[in-house]
Length: 186
Length: 299
Image (cartoon, rainbow over all chains, first blue to last red; front, side):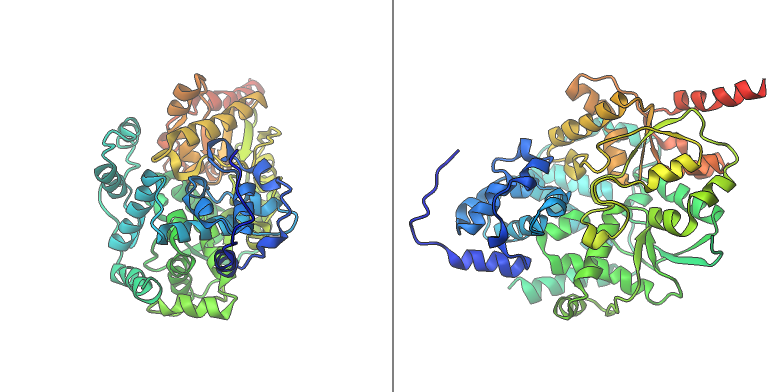
């Protein structure tokens, strides 16, 4: 486990921003570890969720935003459900992901690419086109054999729509993304 | 049971592909139980997990477009079979109680959302509005001999403040409905543990590990099948069961039903509506055990 210094200047701006964006009072966390105990993903995390909360309390921005864990969190809500101080921990993890994206951290490029491909599909068709998402993901990651075995199983069952499901209002959905980019991402 | 249950129905994208059988059996079951579903006109994707990992206003707007579309209908609320769609719609609606958030969301939409319709899962309506007695009374083929582990998935009931349904650690809705239909419900302690969610593509070992635990536990509890309410859980446990077996050196052949398929079977719905042939792990063995006691009774 790495040690970190708390006697330097504390990044209070980071603490305040996480609190403001998540609406959570981070100082309420007394490190009981209940979130980590119930987290099904701890096995795969580089930093357990309770320690990420501690990083935020200590204003350790770089450490909190550069870890893999915030990309591996599935928002299963056990941490939020079980926090004795009613901190919405999953919401904090989401906010850290937003900030990590904005600051260009990309420790799990495959996950980010999968999510981006999913949203591109929604923007393009109004609904997710599963085959299209996989196609874009495989093209961008070079992992062209991803789930080939499963494709061979579901195609004969007619469970994989081979055509996109364009909706009438797909422009309307595309405009949600465009307005979001203009309003909040400049 | 009230005869005037009319809901706006949000099918969710997976219902058009990987969970065709869930959508079909849900519609048929609702019709058989007197619930009228009106599809939300021109519904769009809720953005699922990818949207909320990017931004909450964007995620809220993708859900709110659908809530606004439903507001043009004369309905008691919005219902959806998919827990991921449900959590997105409900979270958006919960956050829009804050006027500031609502304004930000509405700025992204062509048609603003009023946000005054209740949102529920189909399971909640079946459990609370229809009830186990109605299921029991309408059951013509009791699910005798089926030993089932009910698996709710992580987000149908959590966080309780937003989902507001059943128990967040030990939900019982599916257990009770399955029992009403005559199935033997096994005690299953991992009801709300995560299956690995959508990481099957980008981080397969997370799914094979977590779904592997669920299958091992269900088998250890004596279940011969599992029943789910979530398209992603069903896909991880059924379609990916061969990958799970390969990764963990296990040999499960556990059929994974949607609860609507099993209830539909008990109510005597036809094969076209149940679409049991869409399951990857064959349920034939389980059907044999279902028919066995009935055969014994008949002879």
